[in-house]
Image (cartoon, each protein chain N blue to C red):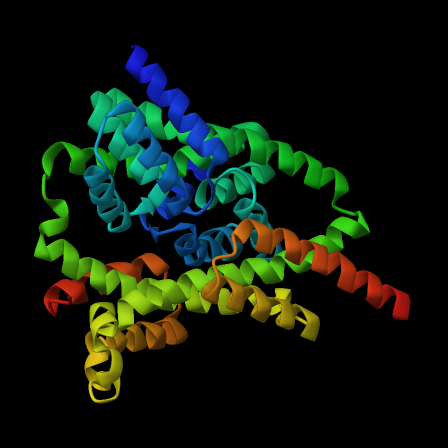
Length: 180
Length: 194
């Protein structure tokens, strides 16, 4: 029971400070889940993100469910997922109920402009840290650059990119095996 | 009751078929607006703005907002739960399969490729935010040929300074990300960031 509560609280904290899409969760996950609780390592986190991209549902929820399930099975998956959505539920309900022109408030605009700059830096440092292992050789770095370019400059769906990268991984590694 | 049930079913389907980040739920939100008349397309753009500038994953925020809009407090609870239910079911199933085939070399090799792609997609999303945070994108659109002369005006210097400070802070202390976020929000308000 304690562990479930732990999962709920940690993921509520993560949900409460995720500004933007699921990628904005990464710095928090790295701090809380990888370094803090050792619930998953860097590689697992990258796996969850990749699989979370191309399975139904939004990434943030998928990643939380993955980690929750790994720690405590189905109850864990539910606890972590409820944790991520709890802050949204409270905050959005309050805004929807009481603040009619939330986005017009200069205070909100300014605060969020600051947060945006911060999130960029946090995501950047988290990506650097997490990908050290994932980008260990030249082939992986090439794959990283190709996917980055395609995703920045073309409208190719992330689903296709992830599936293609998986296939490329199988192909590259098999070739490597043949050489040996 | 029937409206509540319809909300739940529609957002369950949204969760099942929206793949990727929170923005993937958008086409579904427009569809629902059109078919039910619960809210307008204008409401959707408000929802996006609010969801982006409040904590929590965007998809969940939008679902909560729609739920509250249509059915009040009960709707605000039921709708996000319906949205995440497919995730829980699918990911639990995937986890089980992954556990079983973890040692398979084929899966190992596929994951090798997936991790590189995953890192790239996160980096791309980060760059997207960086563009909004550090450039005056509205100027970018209208500047066109005069871009060369106005180059310094294009950058949001306040935000860039803040980013540098935050980066140095992370390198030196490595505090919890929450601290940096709260600090940056305070700086934004204090120095009236636009």
